[in-house]
Length: 363
Image 1 (tube, one colour):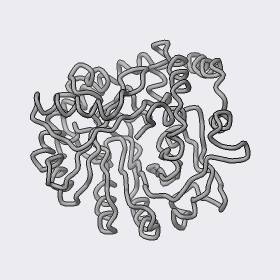
Image 2 (cartoon, rainbow, N blue to C red):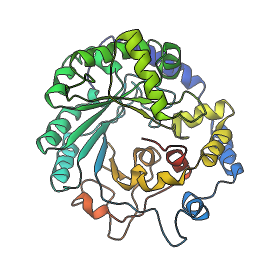
Image 3 (cartoon, rainbow, N blue to C red):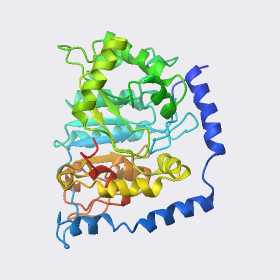
């Protein structure tokens, strides 16, 4: 279950934000209009689009390769409620991973030698009881662990143990910071999130994260604040490094850019702004065939809190499970023998896949 956050000011503000968001939720008729807006673009099925662009032949499918990363969503509880969140996490979500599912994941990792990385996400994964045993189990197997951290969790009441735990297990931090300015971050993620994110970054730096020579990696993630693609990653990283060090004395290792997926909460926002069709057209017009060979679904398996399996966490959010491939594949961590048996399975694709193939792709 989620950690007790007491009278957290951040959670209280997020709950107030959700109340306002709830008043603007799409009605059933509006959701029908949203689907019609997508149809109006005339977007071909993703596989057919790849065929039209000469990326693959008609008889081929986008197939899974060897699984090198297992991404685990341990639960949807979060102390934030971001406008771009594709899994719609918030302090109101109660879905959480059981200890039995954690044990099964470690068992499967032990017999899947191709997997070198465990990527733990949520919600705020650290606020879920599954986080610590997953980290410890994977670390004991010699697998690198990534924590998808929202930074504000570092300053939540009851999370004082987190920093030392991350250091002890040499966990790699991949932290969401959608901008280096307070106004942009708070607009996208909620009031005072930027202030608390900076506090979290300073705590991580004090522990050695992002500091040259420490061996403790601290990477940041940029998400666009609206219906546009991220700028070139190298240019933006230089700007982040300059602004964060000059203004706050903060250092980090790398910056990754993420294209926002037109699904769930972000799709609702785009529709409300009248920009859903425009954004889908942008993704299609920005298609980059060079991204297809390295698209994450070809080497990643996503596990939901209940143990069900997906090609990526976007498919997980849309309830699009793994498909059968060259060998029978499983849709649950409980019935798969090892992750090697998923090699060759056809990737389950949809219109949102254009988000991972637009521009420079999505990390």
